[in-house]
Length: 381
Image (cartoon, rainbow, N blue to C red; front, side):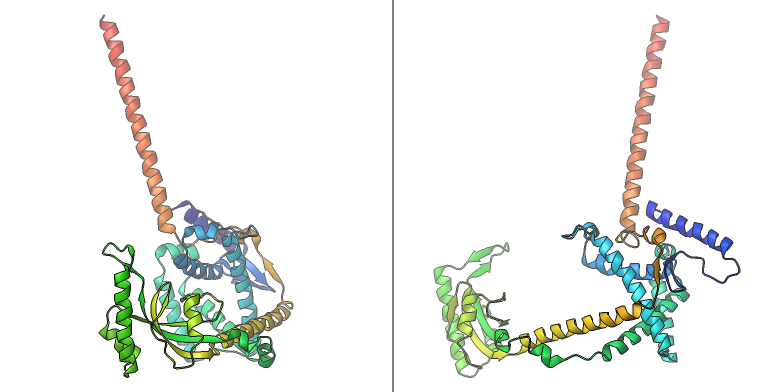
């Protein structure tokens, strides 16, 4: 067991003893309190649920160095995530209480699902994580119930937020977001050899490539579609390219300039750019996909702003007190992940120390034996 696990276990054990001594007969849980909201206490085990999920999700996406990364303002990511987790716990609890006031309940079907989910989640934890988090099936179920009611209340608030979509659309000039969607057949000027090295086509190979696409173009004009052509010519690649002029895209500026001259459904002859030969087909030269995406993003942003305003107004009616003495002990990125690695590191360190100690002992014994031999020879003389 590594130092961090021993410390956490010791902390929980001490608090448990103190809780049984000080709170005997009060019916309270024997755990650390991490935050108090009005008169209700949120315990370490509930915080551990959030910590575990966050560390697991970010741990799958980033390596261990992520937690020590510092942003432009000098804040470690681990501290920023820690603040986010505390805020999430507080918001969840407050909206859970608001949901209870609004009469939100769980029906028998949801109850069954949550109980099954709690059992499955608990069984998925290793013995080590069960010890560290202090979670059990009952506490997990209670957290899932709270989270369910919190989500229902959050949905209620969001559904009642009125967004002036037309006003948001008016903020963006439709012509500036004119989007082009194309399909193309392509033979690139660069290929790869057997050793996976990039190789530029020779002039002769480029001429062959152009001739191949010209034959394909004849097939297309005779009625074949792009997909049929690619099945007949193995050197030809087919793909799609959507772009907003002036924005980064999978195709270069030369391709874009050629494509923007096309009408819908129109197909080019074989054209050349610095990346190879193409046959380009215009799907839609005035798509609103990008414009709609921008409007949607702005709508979501506005909805989020209005929701946060509503949430802050609700939170103003609650008193939140974080137990810094307990919360400061939590080190994000080090609590529920990388445990095996730390154990291995400890074991290797221990083995190294033992090896060094053994070596020093052997050297000492050899020195003693040498001195004893020398003294014996002197005595005989």
